[in-house]
Image 1 (tube, one colour):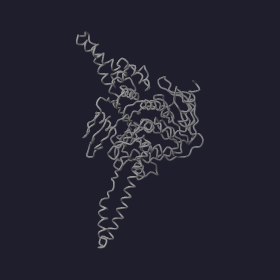
Image 2 (cartoon, rainbow, N blue to C red; image 1 turned 30 degrees about the vertical axis):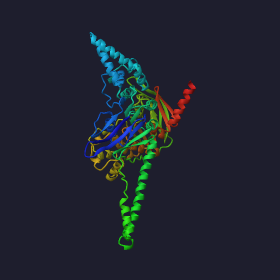
Image 3 (tube, rainbow, N blue to C red; image 1 turned 60 degrees about the horizontal axis):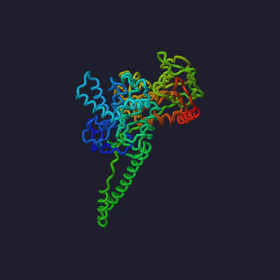
Image 4 (cartoon, one colour; image 1 turned 90 degrees about the horizontal axis):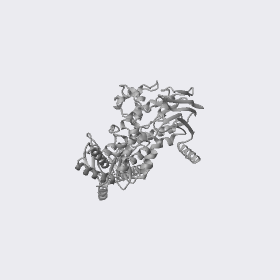
Length: 535
């Protein structure tokens, strides 16, 4: 069990959160949730010991092992991948290092011999001789091929380093596991593996994630940071939404009932306070009124942007045609022979493992890249809006937020309307004067959505649009795209996002663009049936 007692964290005048006392144990899996900026990662760092709180303390049941997903993907560049995983068991790693040091000595003294004998005994008790094999198994399950296991971490692509660090956190089979954004940079297939892996383990877990399907699949409880405090709810994320909403409704209803009673009592006192025959009754009601207190209803830190993509000129029949589309780099093919007739109004999800070419495909579609072979043919009246995964180029300037979004204003967008759009996207009047390039990842995404909202487009192409966003913004985007009547083409590793939107699937695998007419769940069922046929 890991518990906190009166934890307060203060960086400025106002505390981020205060007097948090909570217990996490019994093998429960807690989803730590809350709006961006509420202090989730800070609280997780306090639990791991990486950060000291302003006041309060953290305690762990003696003898229990703590596993933490490292947030520094570049901290182990000079170590082999397999060694980085084994480091997850700190005691085993220390014994292994000392053992290897002694064996590397040119000559071994008698004391060295006795010491290494003790270390060999400890090493065997900790299953050290199977460490590389066990670490390798986890790496393979996480999608890291065996050829990379004994290479250096610096040779591993940034998007794949997290998988190695995940394997590190899982390796020691800890009693308590802290995972901050474990699904970042993972494709849907690997996220599904991780969910299954975590569900099989018996340890207590605290997990930060913005992936709603992942939280629903894995978590037994929700630990919600809001109103400057932490409250634990039994059940997964869907249960939390129902329970937290119900609690707030009950609180408001209770206050409304109390307010009505106070008003009724006050009315009696006002009418009969000066009446000698009813003075005693008026006094009694005044005392009763003084005893009634309204419950405090704090303002939530959660805020939802208002997103609305209006459709421009309506497309009829086909929106897009691909003929033998293919692309690759440096002589290596990513995909080839891609053929597709996409009807207007379709919502197409592009899925596949990391590195197979999903982003490249979208860049070819929007003509940011010229394909190596084949034809990309849009409808003559197609007006395409693009939201890239990497928006560095979009913000490579010194424009203020107001001036940045004003680049896409038309004659119908006066200053008041532009500021209104920024307000709907949760930017204040003061924010409008800040540099757009200094915005957070989530804020930049919202600005990109604002850009698209100001344009008359009938095709949306979006590459990982939910990256960097909190639950409320993801849900707002999800809802906006559900009612969008234009054509949507998107890449996402958010299972809930894909499942709720897609009416057509392209799976980029085996250097092919595999097209399927139907929802994501229907595609998964189709794959299972094909596997059964081929058995």
